[in-house]
Length: 238
Image 1 (cartoon, rainbow, N blue to C red):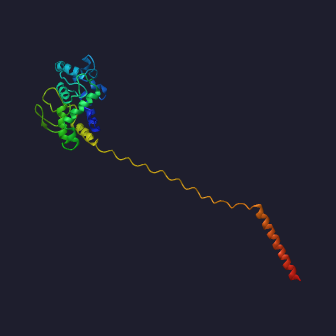
Image 2 (image 1 turned 60 degrees about the vertical axis):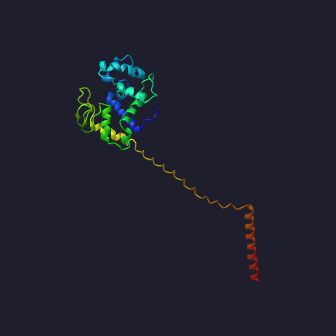
Image 3 (image 1 turned 90 degrees about the vertical axis):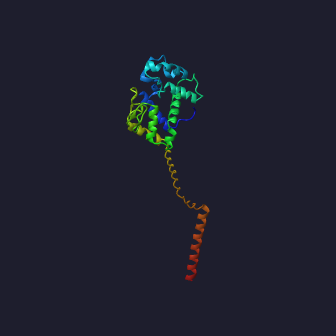
């Protein structure tokens, strides 16, 4: 009972809860057939597994059916699930989490894994779901539990009790969504590398200023040149 519920199955279970109970919130987990849960001494989610199975004995007579919880479990179904899962005890609280685990067990029984693997068609899986939940329509004409039923009818048409509550087109869209949920999510794009900083401009060091000694050497050189010129002029003049 600890097997994780895949994303596709979670989508399917959410729709089953809403279609079967008419509720999309936690109130779905306390619903009994005919929405007569107000007649119970306490909410289903406050009862134990064993208490519910015991109480269901009289519900078919008093309420029209023993269906209970978010997935409208029949009494025989809960007994069978308990036999198949020894980890379930009579004192276990009938919590939303436990109900979801049990609902997942039912969709597995009806071929969820085979549908996801492409081993059975959408129409076939739809029929199997309709066999488990009377509010689901069959997706093609088929021999039902009591007579031949047309696309869109409940599998149990003719029992004067059940009817399909949604269109076959809605179930087909749902099953397409469920199957698509297994597709690998797109690989996130790698972030672009941060731009490299522009290289700093090369700074050419300025020529060092002339030292005081260099200035004096230059002055002496100029005087010497002048003296040589004067001496040459004197000699040439003689």
